Length: 165
Image 1 (cartoon, rainbow, N blue to C red):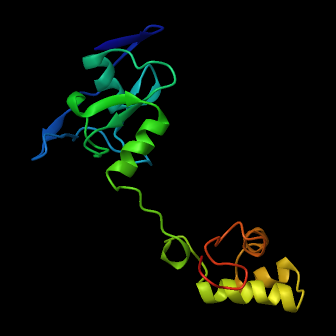
Image 2 (tube, one colour):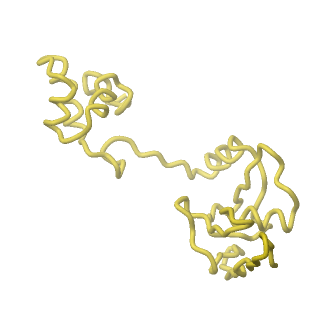
């Protein structure tokens, strides 16, 4: 379908997919965005293909609602697998399907510290009174990270004395 901007025309790249064993239409024509959803450009703006497919097959997405996947497959663009709801609806759906997976502490792939180090940091701060910057330099992390650890905003599940809560 051509669009006109001034005197220039361009065509949308054709959306293609393959159907998997679950009936998902797995988008094969467009790459996923950083969140894992296939995107394309409509009127020079990036848009998730699942939104386009929903609108083409089911109508406009009401204001304040988002497009959710029944199948939990981000690359799926099958309109029968899409529904609209609030972010709260989406989170409830995730929890009901036991997809909520939160890793704390060392199990988090972005963690730079171990539980032992966090306990040591809290102890050093309490007993030696070193500055957050000195402690940060000792453990090769940011001063802000140390601040969040000593106030208990990070590594919340470890009590201030090191016991797991």
